[in-house]
Amino acid sequence: MIQSSVAYQNNGVILVTWDEGEGVVDGPIGMLVLSPLAKPAGYSNTVHYSHGSTLLLTHGRRSGTPYQVTIWFMVEGATVYLATANRERQWVRNDTFTGRAEPVTAPAVVDHVTDLIAAKYWYTRPFIWLARLLGRQVSSATFRVATQ
Image 1 (cartoon, rainbow, N blue to C red):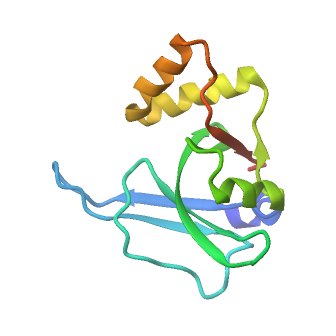
Image 2: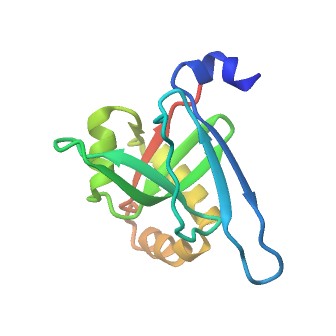
């Protein structure tokens, strides 16, 4: 069973998602998140999310106040990347502070993750293309989440 694996027991996470929509009108997209770090009372909301987004619940690095933000995520093999186009967002600072996610800084890896972003989130392609045309690195913040 997945929950008895070393990866899960070492503060891993199981994401189960499904799509109940039909045709061009998309219904709600459900997701179950299981983790040894999950709060016993759980969490739910009625916000309508798209296929390309997921909800991150983080806590303020000083206040401890819980915040929920919609983030970009990409999965490649056993690696999960979290990304945002605005590196000044508070969740970036909070997750860097807590050490739960490792910032991706190596230029080749940043370029690779930027390609993953463009492949999944089509609306980012013009901005990425323009930045590369001008010889600039895309100024997103990207994190690698350990899953093993």
